[in-house]
Image (cartoon, rainbow, N blue to C red; front, side, top):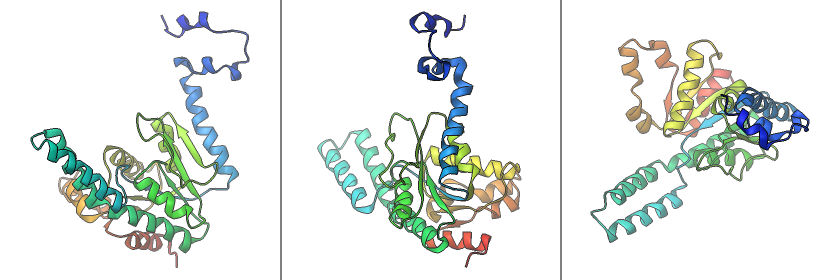
Length: 271
C-alpha cells in the first residue's frame, strides 16, 4: 500500500490543492515539487533579465589565509594535548592542506571582480551560494556592484547563504538535479577552483553535457595547477582512449584569476 494513503486521515480534504502544504509533501507529489523548483528561480531570473552567467565552483571549506592559519593553529593546539590521537592528526593534516589552498579564495574573488569590471553587466556571477570559494566569487561580484546569484541547497551543513548575494537572487533547492539545471541553463563559462566530491560532481556533469552535445561548447577552466594535476589525470584519460585528445585540450588548467579570464576573453573575443 502507498504509504501516502496512511497519512490522509490526519489531513484535511477541504483545502484548495495549491494551498495544501501537507499534500505537496506526499511522495506522489514529487514531480510537482520538482517543477516548482524549476519555475520559481526561472521567474526571478527572468524578472532580473539574467540571460548570461559565469558559474564558479569550489570547496566550501577553503577560507581566507588569515582564517585558515587560525584554523590550523587551533588544530595543532588540540593535537599537542594528545599527540597520539589519529583523528586529531588527520585534522591537522586537513588544516594544512586547506591553508595551502587558501590563496584560491583570493583568486576566486579577483576573478569575479574581473568579470564585472571587464564585461560590464553582461554576465552574472553564479555560485552554490555557500561559504568558501562560493562566498569568494559572490563577494567579488557583489563588492563591485555586479549581479551575484547563489543557488543554495538543503544539507546537514552549509545551508546558510553567504552575505554577498544580490537581493532576491539567493535560492534554496531540495533537489540537486534541479539546482544543476539552473547552473547550466544560462552558463557561458564554468570556472572550477579546488574542491571535493561536490565540486567534482558539478565539474563532470558539465563536461558530460558538453561532450554529449546536451550543452553547447563553452569554456570550462580549472584553476589551481598543482591541485588539479594531482587529482585528475586528464592526459591518462586521453591516453587510454576513454576521452578524445580534443576533450583533453578543451579543459585548460590555469593558476590565476587573470589566466582564467584570459581563457574566457579568448573564447568570446572580449576586448
